[in-house]
Each structure stands twice: as structure tokens, then as C-alpha cells.
Length: 296
Image (cartoon, rainbow, N blue to C red; front, top):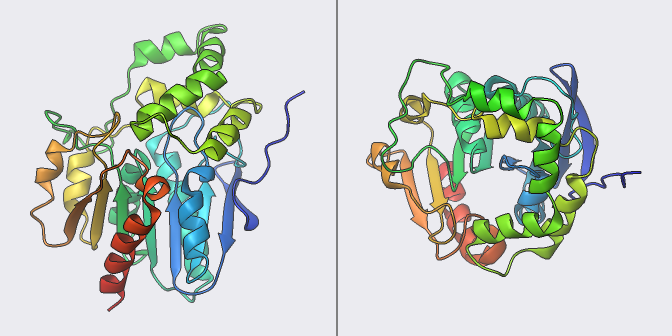
């Protein structure tokens, strides 16, 4: 029997109806609204934003969601698409906004979810006040991602293979063995020292029913937008990019497509892809300065 997955964060847990299932949203604190969005990988969940949730709940009304197919949100054998993920962020942001009299929401996203957040902001003027993109995807050197609207980097042949009898589940089990989860976290950190609490939660999350469904969609490429450069260029909100210099997430050469725009700023820290775990004080100083300027 699988061990039930506990809450990733010490906050009030709400469930919102979304696309035939339920979206889990943690919340806590009082003040201006702030939404946190975890990354996408084999074992993602709101546990990835724990340091930010704990810090900002002392000064803001903070919410963090489990994206569809992850954490305590519904995990089902159903399509997982850019639209499903983007709409989940919009659903959580509108819920948070409604709790604060319609005030726009500051939002922080990690890795691939930065693409979903940027799209949500472009499509929903007035919903967000600012965006913070931590180690965002879509900026690797040599990639020109400005295809027709809605196009993705989907690989149908790989998807067919992954969904063949038994293959996807077998591959997922191999990729989520405890030692392999540790290996990929070390690649994310760019170091042997990782967050052990996150590792333990990831190991437990990987053993939940239907845990493979969303990650297999991720592996097929269908969650990566082939038009994301167009989307990023359309973002008019104040936008902060924070990234590190270690690990697998260090190539941001294509940030040049937006870094010259006055609403975008880039900060680099001597860390891996989740700097708020490694250098929380330095990260928060950058984040607070940005949010204070936006609020002024």
C-alpha cells in the first residue's frame, strides 16, 4: 500500500475545481497577495517553494498551488497540456485575487512553469501585478521559439512509445528511484548538497497513484511552448529573472530577446536552479527590492 502524501506546506489547504478534477492550493499570512508556482519534473510539487512560502507568510498573503497531476492536486490519466497548466495558474490567481478585493497578484514561478505564468499574464491583463521567473526555460542559446501560436515541442513518436503497454510506468519507476531522484536534485543544485526534506517528499510523491501521468506528458515535450519567445516579448508587467550559475540550468543566452526591455531585469546568484534554498537571505533581498519597487 502507498503511504498517503502529506501536505507539502504548513498552511491552510483549499481545493478548487479545475478541468474535471481538483486543484490543491496552500495559503497563509496576511497582506498583499503573492502566488508561488513550482516547477515541472517527474516529482514536482509545492514542496519546491517551501522556503518562499515560509518567509513571505510573515508579511504577505501567500498561496502556492500543486499543478494538475502533481502533489495533492488530482492525478489522473488524462491530457496534460500547456493550456491545462496555464489555466490552473489563472484559477489559483483569481481565487487569491478574489480574497483581496480584486487586487492584482504578484507571482513567482520556477523553471518550466515560468512559461505558463508568462502566458497567463499576457492572456489576463489586470490579474497580475508583477512576475518573478526563477531559472526560466525557453532562453537556451540557439533556440528560436517563435512558431505559430499554441505550437509546442511535442514529440509524438516518443509519446506513443511512452504510452505503450507498460513502458511509461516502467520508465517512471526507474526515474523516480530514491537514488535517481537524488541524482537529478544534485543536477538541479549543481552540487552534492541538496535539500534533504525536499528529497524525502519527492520520494514519497513518486509513489502515489497515477504519479507518472503528468511527468510522461512532460517527457513528450508537449508542455514546452514553441511560441514562448513571442509570449515573453508580449509581457508588459515588471518582470524579474533570477538564475544561478551551477548545474543543468545555466544557459540563458537568449535572455537577450527581453533583457533590453525596461520592464525586465535579470539577477544572477552563485547557486543552482533554486537559489532560495541555497542563499535565502540573498535571494529574498533581491525579491523584496523588486516587490517594493513594484508596490511604490
